[in-house]
Length: 337
Image 1 (cartoon, one colour):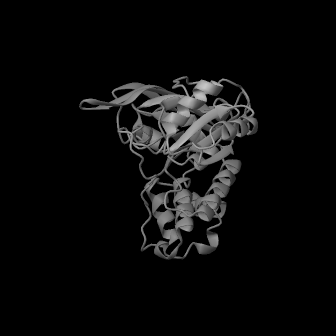
Image 2 (spheres, rainbow, N blue to C red; image 1 turned 60 degrees about the vertical axis):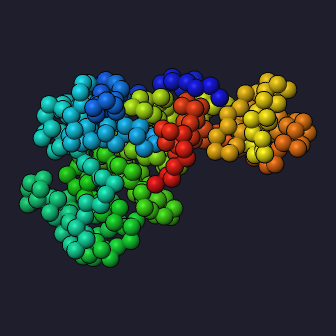
Image 3 (cartoon, one colour; image 1 turned 135 degrees about the vertical axis):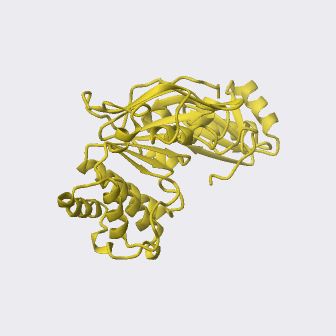
């Protein structure tokens, strides 16, 4: 697997496409940010369109959280620009916030208040007119099927229901852009699927764009478009299907008592270069079943186990960076959390 830093996928094939004239909600050009002695963002440029879920996928330290802070007006970059529709995010943060919804990774609900009370205080913070307030509250709660739970205290809700309440609070003022920081952190698989169901439902009933950060490939897979970040740079950008198509036909994963010896032998005999990662030898190839049968016959003592699968976004990250997604900058595997 060769390390590549191309921003564009090699093929135009896509699962989901917005209409060519779909309005662009967010425009970011050349954002840079640095701490003393360390660059965090290196010229980030991107766009998010109305009705689109854009996932920013990357490991800890990739710069995605810093990018979200800048877009949410909590930090200023060293250079570059960002616009939410006609509003300058950097020069006019107060006006920007009126059209911005943010749901951070850490809960922002008051546990001792009811769902309705949390949203009511949010409405007051945004100075919603009294005549509109009750209508907006009911609309937001209905979008996430929370109207019947409005009088329950937040501390009595499940994690999934609390996340839905966070979203209802975030869209109360009808923002043009919704920023989500690791939105399904702490949710079990069922609650995560439910979260995405309500997020899609939200987009069908509004004219906003959604930008989310995540380190979970399955979450990015459900988005309309994915930007993969590493070490403060965008390494690729495309729909999930486009990005996975750049990897190749199939992935063969091999386990062996001597991975380096097996890798050298396969390259010498079949001309296929592999990458060793997390105790496996990974091979990109077309006609994977035929190649796998040849490998088993050629290296019976070196292959302990073998799997054949379609490429994933994890494989895309490995191809573009030479590392696993959940590996820190020193090369050690780390917990996804």
